[in-house]
Image (cartoon, rainbow, N blue to C red; front, side, top):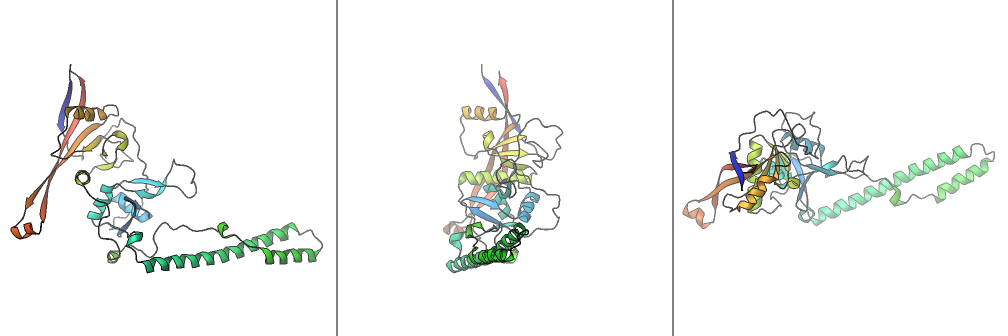
Length: 325
C-alpha cells in the first residue's frame, strides 16, 4: 500500500473564482476607496531592526494600490487595550518592501546610526523646548480650570474675602506635574515630504542582508505579483506565502507556496509531507523554484568579478494529496 502524488502545472491567475471553501483570514485592513489614479509620492520605510514598517496613511494607501498587503501591528489610539482591530504601522514582508524599493516607490529612511550627531542633538533640544512650552500652556489652562471649579463651588459663600484668599493661594501654590501633561506622539518623521528630490537624504542601500533563500523567496514573490496574484505570509500553514487570486478582502487563498531552490534535493518523505499540508485546509501546495543561471561576461568584467544574472521563469509544481492507493 503506497501513497500517490499528482504533479500539475500551475496556470495563470487571471480566471475568476466563484466559490471559496476555507476560512483563513487577513489581518491587514486598509480603506482604499479614496485611492487616486495619479502616481503617489515617494513613500518612506522605517526599519525596526530588520522589520520594514510603513507609518503614514498615504504610504499605506500607496502600498495597497501596488498590491502589497502587509499586516497591521499597531494599536488604535481610542481603543488601545484590545487586539481585535489593529492600526498603524503596517508591517511588510521583506519581499514586499524590496519589490516596492525595486519599483522606485519607496526609500528606506536613515536609522539613528546613519544620522549626524549634531542633527540628532539639535532635534533633541528642539523637542525639549517644545515640551517646556507645552507644559507652560497646559499649566495655565489647568490653573484656569481649577479657578473656575473653585468659584462655582463657593458661589453661595457670602464672604468674598475668603474666596479671594483661596484664589490667591491657588495662584501661588498651584503646580502641574510634568508627568501629567498631554504629549502628542508623532507617527511620521518631521521634515520629510517623501518627494523624489529628497532621495539623497534617504538611504540608498537595502539594510536587510540577502542570502540564497531570501533571493529565492523574492524571485517567487515578484513573479507571482506580476502574474496578478496577491500574497501574504503563510507561516501558520507551514509555507512561505498564501496566494490569493485577487484582493484578500474579497477572496480566500487557493495556494500555499513553498519556495525551493532549483538545485535543491528534496527527499520523498518531505514531498509527501508538503502534499499533505493543504489537504486539511482545502488548498493546493505549490513548489516554486526560480531557474536562475549566471553567465560570465568579457575578460575585463571577469577580472572585476562582475556577473550578470539571467532570471528565467519560475517553475511551479503543484502537489495534491490523492489518498491511499
